[in-house]
Length: 410
Image (tube, rainbow, N blue to C red; front, side):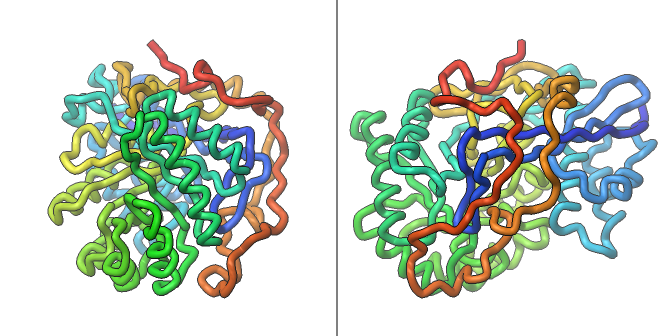
């Protein structure tokens, strides 16, 4: 069997509302999702979700190879780009191809990836997360009330711009989760997306911890600041989580060595092989791992096969346009299905028929770091203009209903 080519698609994750974090907000909630289809000479095609950057260069490392040698091919891709470096979106492209290769390998075996990797339990514990900094109080409560119907008792909100506002919003979410759990204490997390300095982080979190029990604080300072993360960890009761934006195993080593991470995270777009290696590194230091991302399907399968998985992020109950996933959410967990491979079905006609989103990165969206990040003296009480996007025509007109959740394929 040989890899013969690839095809690319771009679909959208339409949240039907503003989504963003301390760095900015997408006004209409339409976020592009890249898809790469990897073809073989035996007619088996693998699906990877993620970036396309540098795809032609990276693909040259695996073209004509046997797709079943996934780990070796992953290292070939890393070697192909070592001069320019594999950081950022190119690392995402490697992860996208890696995920597609694992999909092929499991499809050939006639097994779901979670079973091929050695997992025995198809249930993956989850927490609710909404990219929710742009929501009103009522919208915030409604969003997390919806997730309690699926048994979720843990939630992560976005914040970092105003202590009082963060306390208020965390309290609202805590009360929603506590009521749903009949008084049981929920898990609350706060993600500030690198918005603070070291002292700002300690001061902000300590103030919150006067009245709230935080399970973790996520990315309180810059992602690479090993000493800063350790300083925050020593200054607060909450665990420090990070790692989602680290693009290479070598970037985790100084953070773990400095005691800067209590929860080791990795993003869905970086691929299955990377996650497995990060999980092994974390396990050697008795640290738990927690995948994050909008569509973490590959890492959900991989999470079943590592001993130190803690919980995975659930950002949306519906898949992107034109995709169906063989999984569902029940009793506070993702439940993976039995379809061979990742269990992803791609409706190319539906994706091709959608309007095209404008290209480029909005200057005031969450992907661009604000000029004053880490240097704000006063709280941010009024947000600037949000980034308009082209509407794709299939937005929600009301609350998400239970039957709008991820599609289960049998």
